[in-house]
Length: 120
Image (cartoon, rainbow, N blue to C red; front, side, top):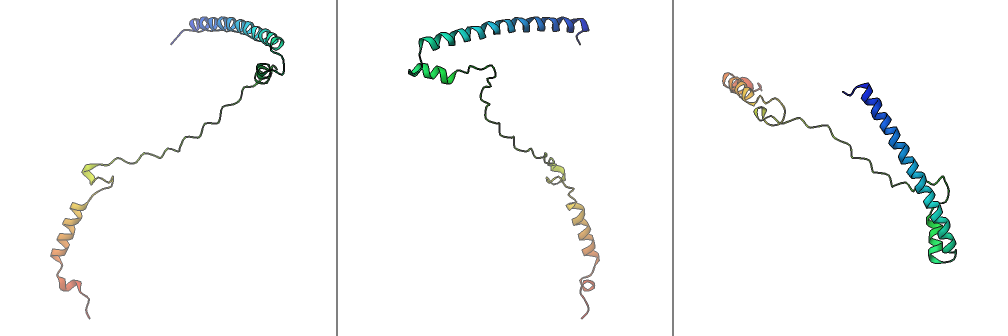
């Protein structure tokens, strides 16, 4: 973990670089304004390029570029399915088929068929 001194030094460097970048952006903005003023003098209104410049280049300070189309929402994620367990019959449920079949075999062998039929 960086020390407090290292974080302060990094913050100072970030502020210095931000200041330099802002100074360059001011120069770029001034160059763009000068170019527009010169272009509108040379390329007069009524010409194809003059009209294009005037219609496509924003001249106000509160220009907001067009917003991109909204991103469609991601499809909902389903909860993960339980993992199959081969030892339990592969359906994620307890498989007592062996125990049940033995119980049924024991019951069916100990009960006589005549005991299962209803008296008439």
